[in-house]
Image (cartoon, rainbow, N blue to C red):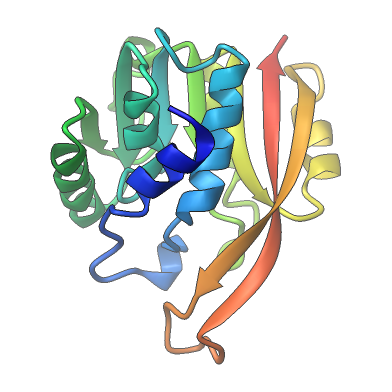
Length: 203
């Protein structure tokens, strides 16, 4: 499946029914999700691999990984309503994904049982709560040797410093992230921001 074919499939997926600003529930745009996943696949990190999507929301990255031939995919999100949408999206695409409603910081989850080859994620950018992405980075590096994450523009120096001694940054890809009007405080129908897709490799 080429990049455009993947993007077209992902564009069909449902978004959040009632997005919550506190959780920074912005739908990951299909072009960004497709680019991350296609690039990871070209690096051998998806097909035949166990993949986990942390903070999966409505499941776009998890479903895309399954479309690209991951051997097993797990999506985890704190919001049960988002998980319901993610399950519908997986069903619509005809892919098999295990979705779990849980907090990535919870000690009650069997994290050892979720160990995988690759983590894909679009963690909170920290607009509502500073450093909200840190628990995602920590958990991702605990679970997998390869991590592909979407971060706000300019985050690379922070990620490099925060993961020093634990991981190395292998690549950074910058791309446009069209953010549509989602919450009452948004003034414009659409704003294009730039994000960094960062590939981390655990040491």
